[in-house]
Each structure stands twice: as C-alpha cells, then as structure tokens.
Length: 308
Image (tube, rainbow, N blue to C red; front, top):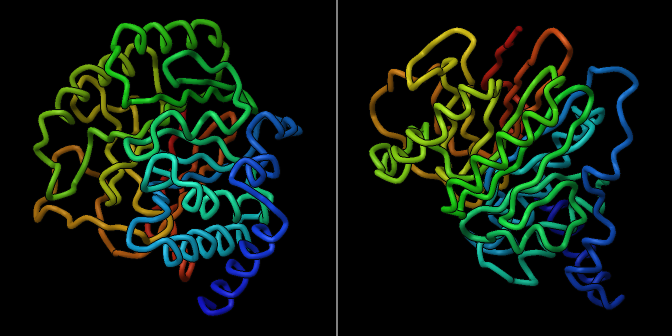
C-alpha cells in the first residue's frame, strides 16, 4: 500500500506543480469548517490528528504517511464531518513544500479541516484558511451540532487575552451541550523528555482551573508525540465530571518520542506503539465516544465513552 500511496502522492504533487499550483492553490481546494453543512440533528462524528509535522523525518515519508493515515481512516470513517488538527501541521514555518505535503491529501480526499497552530508552524498556518470567529492572537471558535469548539494558539503567552477569549466564547455559547478545546502544547503527558517540564506544569496550573470553571468536556492536544488519555480531571486531580485530556500521537509517523517508564496518577491510558494514529469522536446529546486507531491497520488501541 505504501508503494501505491507514494506513487499517487508523487503524481498528484507533480501534476499540481505542472499546473502551476502553489500552497495557496492547494488551500483553495481544501474545505474548512466553514464549508461543512450542519448535521441533520445534534449527532455527528469528527476526526482528530496530532502533529502531522510534514517534513520531520523526511518530506516524502511524512507526506506519504499523512496521506496513508487519512486514506485508511476515511475508508473506515467516511461519515466524519471534519478533521481537527492539534498543531505542528508542518515542520518548518513557511515551507511551501511542506505545506503542499500537508494540504494535498486534504484537497484530494475532500475532508474539511479545522487546523490549530503549533510551535513549528505558528499562527501563519491559519492565514491560508478562511476560519470563523478568529481573534488577533490566533484563537478561533465555532459551533457544530450543539457542540462548541475552541482552538487556541498556545504559542501566545498573553494569558489575559487567552482567558478573555475563553470566557467570552463560553458565555456567548451558553447553550452548547458539549465543550471542546483544541491546542498544541499538552500539559498532561507521558513523554520521557517532557514529563517534568516546567512550562507544561505552568500551563496546567493556569489552564486547568480555567477549563474547570468553564466546564470543558474534552481537550485535544499534541506536541509530545505520545498518546495519553487522562481520567476526568478537575482542579488537577481525578474527579468525575471533569475534563478528559487526550494527547494525540503523530498522525503521519513523522516523529515519535519515547514514553516515561511509569504510570502517572492522571493517566487512564498511555502508550507509544510508534505507529501513526488518528482518533474519531462520536458526539450525541447524551455521550461522547472516543475511538483511537493505529492507521496502518485501523486496529482500535483506545476506546471510551463519556456521558453527561
């Protein structure tokens, strides 16, 4: 399958270059969350990807891995309404070749995207898309099927503006059944190199209580290239009714980090299979269902249901 995907992607990019496409041209063919029609009711599903980071570990291999993950996931989960990414969509800020590797599969497969900036691409990744309700520091929000989604640019250290964005958005959408927050810099991790990172601890101290007070149901994060799903957390401790934090592993296989050799008090599931992974979240008025698969075989690696 990899050989076929490599040929398909290479041919697609070659034709695009011959036709005079640029990364801006690809972006014009990528649907965003603004292009997704509302669901018939308040039940829908979406996909979540961590760190495609096209260019890390090689441009061709990461682009082929990204195409493979999306192709296999959509073959099984073709009813997904859209895809959210948790940052580091490319490896090198401003690289046209890496942007093409990220955008080309989205354009060819037709999946709508709601991207998040990471430390490698920063908020410039948002500039090529038409995104709803975006503020001046790289945050934006939208509602879909009774759920509220807030994407944060955690490269930004303007904590008062960040808090104002979150509070005002939740207040303006007080009727939302579920609240999702998507951002790059995880603060619940099992990565050996970052498990005791002071920056992560500081973000946990700041964002944790704010998310608790605002009633966030699920946080989707990246950055640490391992997979971890926490127990419901409230005021930094496991607590029923708290926020479930999901740190997503690489969706393209471009880079993996080793996992620490211990289980943390906040961990419900933590793993590093060193295979590309994607998650599907099914949303109904009564429950969220998270299914995480390795995308080379679509074997289920994690599954949970969260109810109101």
